[in-house]
Length: 365
Image (cartoon, rainbow, N blue to C red; front, side, top):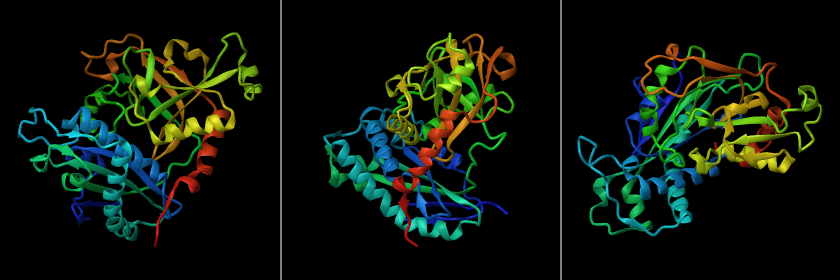
């Protein structure tokens, strides 16, 4: 029996047997998007308000700097640059407009999707906002009155069985295979197509692909944010590290800063907030592979899995991937994290899940 798949677009619900996967859905449409899921047997949407704010930020960034990633191309070739009217709208105005537009669609579509949800499943929810280039004609300055007429919302729902944190064999296995994204501070659908060439370099059993611009500074995953728990002093013994995790001078959590070219993930921001509130040292700096002997734990974050510990990381010995056709052509170095999630990873994960009830949007039945 196939899992639930429903698409809502322009007021029309499609739940036919040939409803596309979310990957195909995104490749067929251009725009800014965000993905979250329901929680607690479909009773709430995880961190919904945060997702709406990030979606608004992505759309605004693309509108002002890369409109070809937000609007469907006006020409069949897709090569003609899109020129958008100037926009004086503040981020708060974009947030207000996106929230209104998206919630109108969700109020129609979500009750239908919840009725189709199978027992034991949650719903993965992907919301995409795209521009209609043809409706920009005659607009000299994009304002709130023009917004609703120019942008459309499409929503993809699919069944999702939640990941169970910490179970043996559920850790992520990572491999560094590609360079960082353009316009990384925005989440846009074209990345689903652009990252496809990286798949030829994915080793067997690897579950996520890492990105770097120099082969040493690790930025993020292709669909996740990346974190390392790093010892500060190489001279400290490993057992001493484990005994002194409450000592703020012995370790720090590291993740690349937004300015380095990473997505401002919703769960990434929650990790930073949790670390600060719990007194866990955290620094926004790209972790250096040359220092991987100091790494004691690693984890990745995404809005579906929330937080997943890392079991292994593979990195090419030389950073010359452009002309390679297969993962087997690469000489790899590897870092293993044995024994399941570490103490710091567990603490952060537990605290984030404690906040689900505070950050979720409760669904009305």
